[in-house]
Length: 200
Image: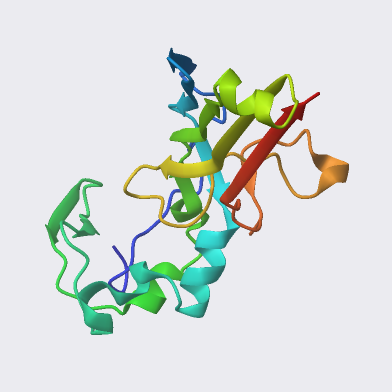
């Protein structure tokens, strides 16, 4: 620690990996009499992302993380001060210097913006009903069905990521092959729909 703030290594270090440890998915379609239910879920686990949403919202003071210790001076937990002795050895003593959340967040530590990119997404859920033939015959049709669906109903994220959807491809379509960089993209929308299928 120096002045109540962390001291960072001057050497480059690997802080994350955009490649997930594993990916998986699950889909199902269940039918019972005239009803059918379908769902699609997938997951990606063990990868990291760099989040500019985290950086900007913390810099502007709009992120919940900026309210730590009620925005009052605090001592960074479990921090120590290093003193180099004349013989070259180091002595560590508990840090007693207070700092503020904005100084701690905006101190050049870009590694703070690397987040666990794991997620579980329920992509779609649907429910369909096929009307019995006796009703279909009354309108002189061969088939009639009604479907209700919702897309992107739920996403489960690690506790540390309250900032952005980690399923990103980089800054803009021109560089869409750059994975793992979240550039303040618009959150994905949840959509609801109704589908009526009628065949004659």
